[in-house]
Length: 232
Image 1 (cartoon, rainbow, N blue to C red):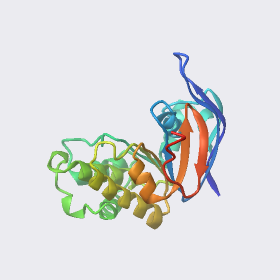
Image 2: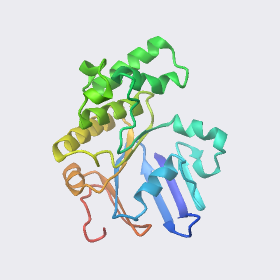
Image 3: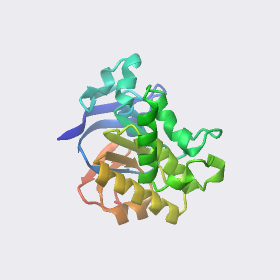
């Protein structure tokens, strides 16, 4: 069953640049998909359209049954509750502990204290940080901070996890730790993961589905792919 359907999508910015041309894509529930491509290929634009940071100029994007392009601004929260987002730059709140950073994602939707405690501890266990609940972000390594960001993104049990260059600030060893965490989340929770990346080594090692974009066009969609150097 498709969780995401992208139909005939074009994205043209106000400055006249067209970032995505006539994109068609179907992503099944439970998939793990890498989105690869060079600078300006449209990777980040696609991710931003999926969580409605950007709207397509033409076409249709369906995420979990919601027509993202037609969603009114005041209804965007309905989409955001279905997904978690992980960025390259962690975006943790520096004055909150690890526990409080993750709990914050549940507090804003009015969850009860008991449920918050249970789910936060489970999310931190899933990213192997249960022993760091009282630490502050500046007491953690970059890899640990990104794992907190992942815990925060999954604590509300989203169907979809969007990751925009989540290993971009990390060394190869820490990057592979993050990939192990994401792979475990995909397998144990059944969360669909879409990850934009330029890291060839990660893509080649993981052998997941690979969407290759070039100059805004879809040039390849492999089921168990490696980094397509020629296409990129």
